[in-house]
Length: 422
Image 1 (tube, rainbow, N blue to C red):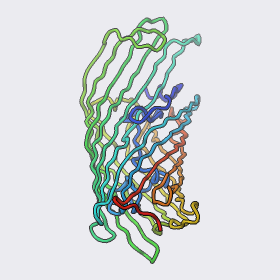
Image 2 (cartoon, helix red, strand yellow):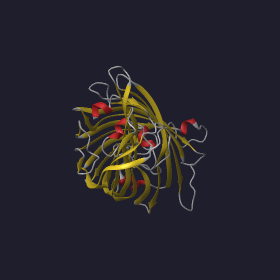
Image 3 (cartoon, helix red, strand yellow):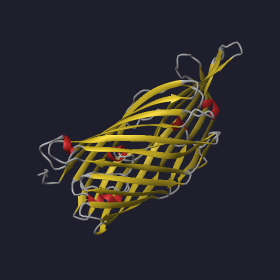
Image 4 (cartoon, rainbow, N blue to C red):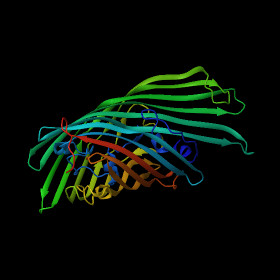
C-alpha cells in the first residue's frame, strides 16, 4: 500500500487550530505521526540545541537541569505556521497549517532550584491523500481517499536543582494523551455502495527524563557549558477499534453508513526506547554562545494495534546532529534598542528512524531568529524561521521542502518585585 500512497495526487488540508490539526505532511501517515521537537522557539532558532544551554531568564525544554539557573519567573507561549511543498516526482502540491506550539510557566525556588509546568504537542497527524485508478480507455474507474487526523499532547512538570556550584541535575515527568483517526474511503464508478475502513486509536502513558549540566569557567569571560539528557524508555497504551462498513455512494462527499462488514477492538503498546542527548558549548554570558548537540535512540516498536500495519514500512535507529548559537551586541545598553536584540542561527541533520521501501527518511534543516526586547525588561518577543528538506523522490518516496515560522512570547518577572535592566 505504501507504493500506492507515495505516488499520489495530494490533497492537503487547510489551517486548523491547536489540538485539532497542526500537520499536513504525508509522512504523518505512519505510526503515531510526526514527532514534535519539544523545544522552545529560542532553541529551534539555534538549530535545536538546548541540552547544555541555561539562562537566568529564558526557559528551555530540552534539559530540566537548566531550571536550577532561573532567577526570574518566565511565562511563555508560542505558535507556528508550517508551509510545505511536496514532490513525488510526478506531482507537486503545497499546504500550510498554523497551530499553538506550547505554553508553560517556570519559576525559581529559592537560590538553587526551579520548576516548570506546561502543555505542548507530542506527535501530530494530518494528511489527506487520493489514489486514482483508470481503465485501459483512460476513464476514471476507482478512487481511494486516505485521511488522518489527531496526535498526542503532553502535560509536563520539571524540577531542577543545583547540587554544588556549577553542577545541576533535573527531572521531568509528563503525561501523554491523545487520539488518532485514520480512514480509507473507496468509491467505484457504477457501484452504488462505497466502503470505508476506519481506525481509532486512544493513546496514553507516562514519560520521564533526567538531565545533568555542568558549567566550567575557563577565563574571566569564557564559560564552557556541557549537558546530558536521558529520556527514559516508556510505553504508551494503544486502545481503539477498527471498523469496515458500506455507505451510500452519493458522490458529493456525504457519508451515509449502511452495513457494518467488519468490526473489532484492539489493545496494544507503543514502545519508545531510551533517547540520549549530549551537548557542549562555549560562550560569554549575556553576549554570545555556540554549541553542538548529538542525540540518538533505538527504533520504536509496536505491539498489536493497527498503527504499525503499513506494508513496506519499518523503523530504525534515529539520530540528530545540531550546531547553533546566539549573539547579543550589548544586552545592558539603554541607548540602542538594536544592540539589545538577540540574533540566533543554527542547522541540524537527522535520521528520522522511518524506513520506507528500505530507504531511510532523512531531514536537513537550517534556522535563524531574533529575540526582540519588550521595553526595558528582560521579556522578549521571539521570531524563528526554519527551512529545510525531508525525504527524496526516488524509490516511490516523497520529497518535502518546508518553511516554518515561529512566534513566541516570553514574559519575565521577579514575583513581588519587577526587575529592570539598569
